[in-house]
Length: 308
Image (cartoon, rainbow, N blue to C red; front, side, top):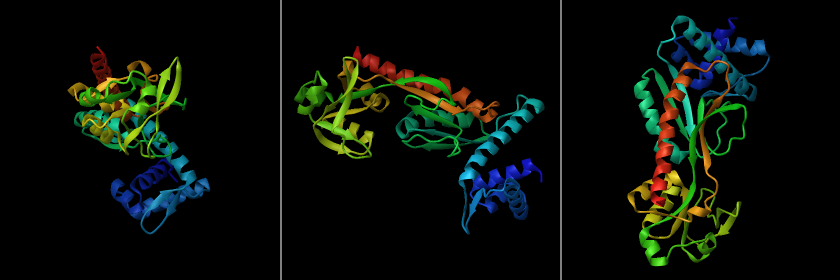
């Protein structure tokens, strides 16, 4: 059994979700694909794939082995690049994940520029508001807005974002400007969360983060909806600064309670620590880091001008 051929067949089946699709992708007969995967499972002594009439899925050992196979095959391709030609254009599939709002506003535009610059790379953009496991979900690089808990990942810093409170000038003229978070109980507030209404907001006072109760006039499930209501004069909204930036820049929203904002959240691109970084991933990181960092700086500059 040729181990690399069997690993390549297994990875193709896992990525395509079936043996027939993998056969078409590799241009190899279906029987050959099936035999190579079966030989690999026999050699390892474990079942790597759950098979059904419609689709195959990775078993738990299969998920672990799939990640290892991808790293091994990527390392092999990078070694071939080093030997056959350092300047060969990066090729292949790349998966990038980011939070929905930031991803739509700031990662996708950079990703589209990247696709134009690298026509031989195919990009899968996974926009989800949860922490994605790079290994288990076959992701190459993730944008994360939070303190990083996983020290095994390599992080490329992009800047910081803040959580801010904003309201329309019309609302503030009608209801007054709050000067302390404790006053939010007397103001109309717009809460948003996919988990249900939030009846308190977090602020920092005397060096400590505290939750202050708010009076919820309207609750919704997405930040864009809350900000649209704030711009319409319904009340105050608490969101990330990148979500509120467009309204602040246009003058339809004003920032409040700036001195009580919690510490800013770091923004990083993170990826798994490999001895050899795949050429396609290195190309994306080198392309995306300065561009996304510039966008994060522009958000901060908008907030600074608003505070001046």
